[in-house]
Image (tube, rainbow, N blue to C red; front, side):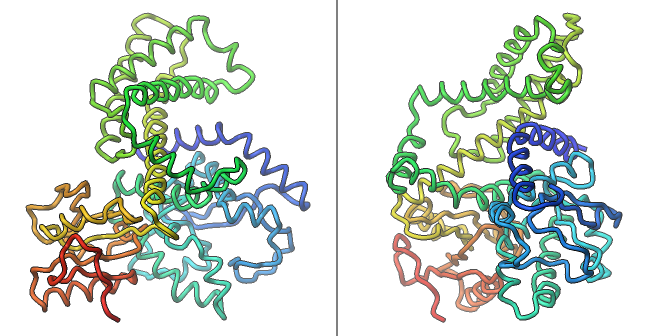
Amino acid sequence: MLKRVVDVVASAAGLLVLAPLFLLIALAIKLESPGPVFFRQERVGRFGRPFRIFKFRTMTVAPPTGGVPLTVAGDRRITRVGALLRRTKLDELAQLIDVLRGTMSLVGPRPEVPRYVAHYPPEWRERLLSVRPGITDFASVRYRDENDLLAAASDPEREYIDVILPTKLRYALHYVERPSLTNDLRVLGLTLRTVFVPTLPSPTRILGMNDRKLWLWLDQAMSALHPRNRAIAMLVDALVILAGWHLMYLFRLGFERWQPGRPPYDDAVSAGVVLCYLLFLAITGVPRGPWRFFGFDDFKRIALACLLAGTISAVAVLMAQLVGVARAVLLLHPFFCILMLSLVRMAYRMVWEQARSVAGGVEGEPRRAIVLGAGEAARRLLGAIHRRDGWTVLALLDDDAAKQGLRIGGVTVQGTIADVVLPHLLAGATHIIVAMPGASAERREQVIELARQTGLTVMSVPSRLELHDAPQALPT
């Protein structure tokens, strides 16, 4: 139920906020080639029910041929506007309509066409189709360059059915069997980082600034914790809460009745609501300054503060008999604030992590590692590489039950060593580091072999090396 409420609020808010962008995209599509703005295709949804998905059209309109429903990189039917939409994933934003309609969710296994659903393993099919399909999932992050992979194959459809689809289904099955808000937030964060972070440096060229200088400045500015930073954070929170109030009115009344439909005392009510929210954010201990450390604990505090503040505000409005205040606004506003306050902090953290990696002198892609072992070796290793020289440690894994959930060097122990093959842990990772110098040779060999099954670069900290040195790659 909560997931559906979040989907409705987020999709409605997204459609309202992105309406100008949608109009620009629609105009560009219509100007370049004749045909509809949206591409509609039958997909298989929850419980196997078919539905027609929304996407912005990226290809020229052609008569149905009954051919392979796959598009590879370099397809001549892709328009210039379509190529840009595909590269930036903007064509997928139209699926917010499907989320609002209830045929899709923000996060969930990607919906397939019936032709490929027929290739689902029979023992998995019912479970895979038991949830609403989503705009994004772990497989979407893993196969962001799917079109390029298919273009390089001699038989794209066979490559998709034999190689890509089975991996996607394993990701999907893991998601279905372990549903959690944490996984949803992680998928959204990885998707935003995958889509937007690679394009962030480009504005610096317009401003005439060197990329590295800009990221160094951002690192210094975002790492400073002065009183003015806390005041700015409080101001941003207040503006988000106030914007949410007005957007809910916009959603409830529409553009034409937005202003005339509000009671004359609504500005005073909205100011009181903002103060109430800020008070509960302070009471629940939501950090004001260090947004760069935003995590699930902060999300829980934000959710608690918004629900309490929303309830108190609604009770106050009803007791004061302010009948002009829309009840839908009182109901939806807390959920909108939970979403937007969290997304603002998540975006801030992603930008800071990118700035931090550049400030550390990294050339090329950042390196994100999962460390196997959570003992003294891992602790010293984290002190040497975490947030330095482009390294980010995503998680620790250890078989000691007493260590589960502990934070060591700012990184949480998220499971046992056998969990290293789980998709939600591997998503976004580039390296596996084995930090078990005290284990027996046989045990180390077992762990290294398990790590190799992930397909990521495997590194080790041999017992003969000082742990503050950089880890050495395993011989091949």
